[in-house]
Amino acid sequence: MYTKALEQISRARTSLILDYPFFGSLTLKLKLVPEPQCETAAVSPDTLYFNPEWLGTLNKKQTIGLLAHEVMHLAMGHCWREGDRKHTTWNVATDYTINYELLNTGFSLPPGGLGMDNSKYVGLGAEEIYTKLLQNPDNKKDEKSDEKSDEKSDEKSDEKSDEKSDEKSDEFSDPGGCGGVLKAKGSKKEQKEQEVSWKIATNQALQKNKAGLSPRVRKLLEDRITTKLAWYVLLRDFVEMTAKNDYSWTRVNRRYISNGIILPSLINEELPEVCIAVDTSGSIDINKLDYFCKECSNVLMSYNTTIRIIYCDSRIQGEELYSTQDLPLKMKPVGGGGTDFRPVFDYINKKQYTPSCLIYFTDMQGYFPNTAPSYPTLWLDYSKGSKKPAFGTVVKLGTE
Image (cartoon, one colour):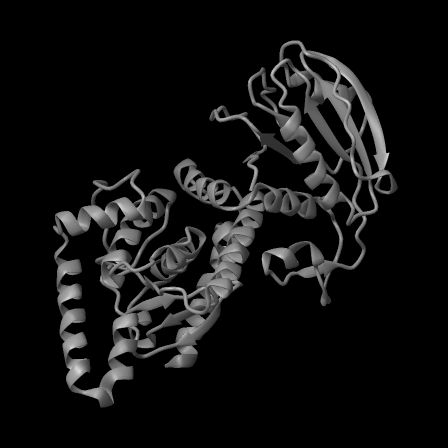
């Protein structure tokens, strides 16, 4: 039975990689472990547990949907966000945040799951839904699950010999019916390492595989990443993705050690030319520009590359060329007029530059191009607004 179940998941994972590569790539981070005490399935930061007998009741499309559901739990950080909340109620709340969105993306989910036939909680976060469930618990499955949990807790106090078994049974309960999410374990440091590792993996998968994701799912994921992950980690991640080199696990990637993450190092850390555009309009924030220069230099010091800085307000005001040996960056912004982002892209095309990527430092208040260039673009936004361009990745610059 175990072998058949593993084959079923492996086939579903292959289909997910082909049809929904964002979800498929993230399933590769998970070990597959049969667990008869699972009510359905459950996911931890590194493992997908499943009940082989229950899995056998699902068809291929439902199995694919199960994998996507469990990946969304991790991508949204649900196992780290639970805190001291009731485990069963938290599972219900998180299912409401993702199931409706997955169905609208085109997935089929295991039958009987929550949030599949209504949209009453659409747009609400898991924490807000959790509070509403406690205030007005209209979900009978959730109430019954909590009652069972309380009963098992009473039994545990009277039957010490069954304590470990009961705890495991409670942990693997699934009031949502589509696959649960387990509370993160380990020290605070270990949990932080797990969470940051998943944020980085989610960001990498999102940038490479946006196809097939609905706008709402993309927004959920982007909001999770940009509001919770330090901007300079995202900057490093963005630059690293543009370096088309081989990886090696034989030596540690030092750029992430300070965040407690062990990732492979690039065998040949060469990077084609990086373009950095600086918005030199009258609203430029010099203090944040200095902060940006420092972190950008730290990232680029790891590579053998050339850095081309282009200054622009409503027109090109000049450019500077750096090599890695010239770091740290010391920018001399020239301008002070209005803001138009289009001249930078036109200038790169006219000069026939072929950057590996463009990093644009700006407050996002200007005229954007409508057409994406052939190279990846990162908009490093230091404003408090929410204006978004038609293409590229937007990262909010903070002062963490």
